[in-house]
Length: 245
Image: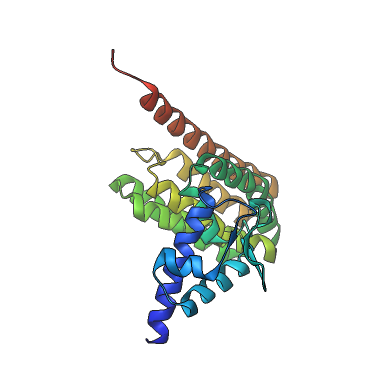
């Protein structure tokens, strides 16, 4: 079997196991043997071993000789890993993950915007403005995919422009969240332009070197996004619990 095929197989096993772990189908402290993984997913020992290695790198399991593969508690996982985030978003714990991500953005993005404004790089302003215009175009066309792509690009530039390498590495986490909102139908059906105006405000504040204004606009954006998700989730719960008489 080719190396490419093996990678594809172990990747599928990693994803399947990860989803089961996030869903609580395989619980913390439970011990798996390689034989169990082989049998459950119909793969070779080589593929099972490589899948376990990847899961170990994400800190979701630990492997010890003569003990087996032990599932770690979720608190020990690499919760910033984009694949781990996707597993949690696909699990019954989706709402908790969405809230954690929203709280993370609320803590980081205003600070990143302020730092970017303090640096006053004109190229950053141009990039931010271009992505905001792309968001506007997508919103007017009702194109959710293009809107999310432009939104993710905007926040990647903003986090990177902060000059804080740790903030910059959160761009992928933000992108996963934005993509998940689209895939899970957690975007408003009609994309409003109010939030886009806030994105333009950030671009202007960054260009003018106004950290406080940049931070406030960023705080408004993440706060509004969080409120939208909460409202859509609440509406969904109401629809589920409504029982015709």
